[in-house]
Amino acid sequence: MDAHRSPEHHTPVRVLPHIKKLDDALGDFLVQITCKCGARRIAEPEALARLCGSSATLQAVGLRMRCSRCARKAAETVAVANSRPQGVPKKPR
Image (cartoon, rainbow, N blue to C red; front, side, top):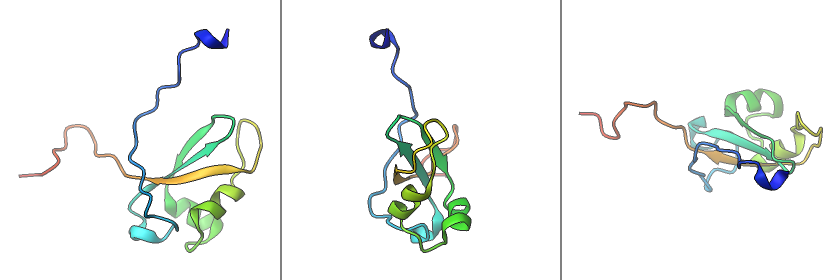
């Protein structure tokens, strides 16, 4: 039955590999937290900094986050770019 399920459709995100800590790039990014079970969350670095400290690495944040689906504490975290709202041009005139 699982073979007939449609894959989850997530908005494509641009990963920012140069960001390693929550206080990098002045916090102008989002953090994507993905569990091994497939659960995925997007969080703001300011919210995670209140929990883990502003100088915490993304890897340390992933070890502290508990999955809401399977209750594991080992998640993969990556920094992703903020998306522009629809209708906003790339280069405003």
